[in-house]
Length: 90
Image (cartoon, rainbow, N blue to C red; front, top):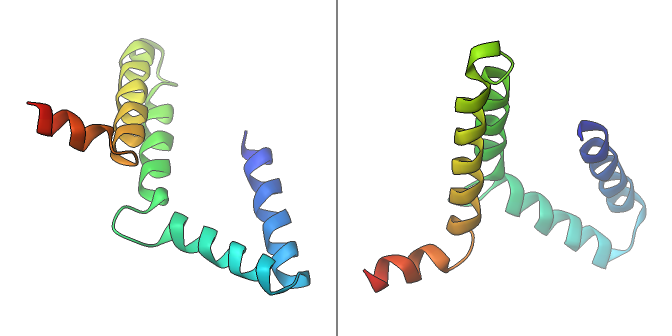
């Protein structure tokens, strides 16, 4: 998985260096969306890495998996309007 993400990042960096203004704009927007704003992606990625590292401990595999599911659920709900609709419904 890490190689896929590194390949995508390298491809985007190359296209931004080489490409036209549209490609540069798309690369800039993608970078700002992932690493900027109110809720940057690197915080979620760091949480996933830490929980995955805890899962390498033999007795903590199920706990790590439960937290991984929780993090992914919160990540999906926080980036969609599902969470606000759920809170408004309560």
